[in-house]
Image 1 (cartoon, rainbow, N blue to C red):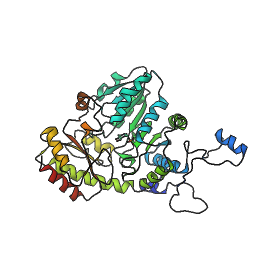
Image 2: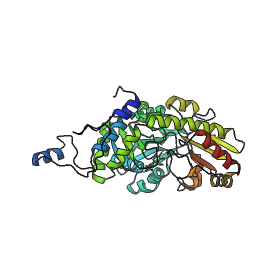
Image 3: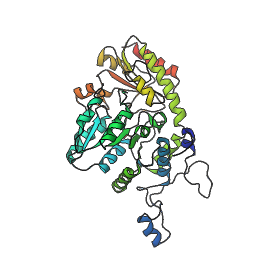
Amino acid sequence: MSSNKFETDAIRTQMERSEFLEHSTPLHLTSSFIFEDAEDMRASFAEEKQRNIYSRFTNPNTSEFIDKMCKLEGAESGYAFATGMAAVFSTFAALLNAGDHIVSARSIFGSTNTLFTKFFPKWNIETSYFKIDEVDQIESLIQPNTKILYLESPTNPAVDILDLELLGQIAKKHHLIYIVDNCFATPYLQNPIKFGADLVIHSATKLIDGQGRVLGGATVGRADLIREIYLFSRNTGPALSPFNAWILSKSLETLGVRVDRHCDNALKVAEFLESHEKVALVKYPFLKSHPQYELAKNQMKQGGNVVAFEVKGGIEAGRQFLNHLKMLSLSANLGDTRSIATHPASTTHSKLSESERLETGISDGLVRISVGLEHGDDIIADLKQALEYV
Ligand SMILES: Cc1ncc(COP(=O)(O)O)c(C=O)c1O
């Protein structure tokens, strides 16, 4: 465990310098690495030495990125993936056998939900779900074949908060592998391992890149579990590219300052929306009106950059609002420097049935704002003028 502060580890975790003594990390665009002789080749494959062999297994850039992620999350080990979904899929596929069972929060990212409902049943892996207000019923969902307890907090897109510590205790009591998707919080705002998580998953595409350039993912946590995930991944090929790892490792150097500003802007946006007469509901973890405000304060440093809200007048009013935004982008991404508005019911969560959407707080009129790094006054001015058309 590192004794440095977050910002220092985010900057000073760096691969060994080459003979050129470069200050900034160089990019190692190479698919493979050479061996000194036949014995070196044999010993390397036998894992008698720790070294790079082939970039699907490891590469200096992916190792730097994942070493940094491990320090920032307080994890023993990790593996870097090409996307967040590659991290989610490979983590579950590596750890589960046919016939195993997952207990998952109902509010999860749309593609993760599709994985659980459409693809895993092909391998006889079933999932039982609990809603945000059904945490007391989790134990009744656990079966003899349950292997994993899974959740996101804050949730996408309704930014609900689950009690990480309480769920960690349940997982421990029932010997389940406890996995948290920490994408919305980033390691800067929340460290699920402190609350008992065995593994933490990230879509690095979001705030970790933070500039809308590259896709990436990571799973970090218990070394014995990561070993299984590594063996699965080195043979199936979801590895992060060295170029994207180089970008993401550089991005982590500024994660703290960027997320501080994202959160300041998001709180201002949430307060503005809450005071607006045409807004029916605002959800932001650090708004006092958020149903899990105290819990959010307890487990997160700040509220994150996503604000969810509903305009009065339902879907048509929501459409008018989105169509009149001048500066905010309409895009499915989040965690960019540019503020983004999305309509989850018709995009990221459109594969859910209407009742599943309502169970997860995604009404037809819900708008998700990923608050960016433009000046807060300008973001609010754009929201204000678009609300005039509602
Ligand atoms: C919470 C969460 N997990 C996972 C993912 C998937 O990440 P990626 O798009 O990098 O595959 C997303 C994407 O939006 C997400 O919001």
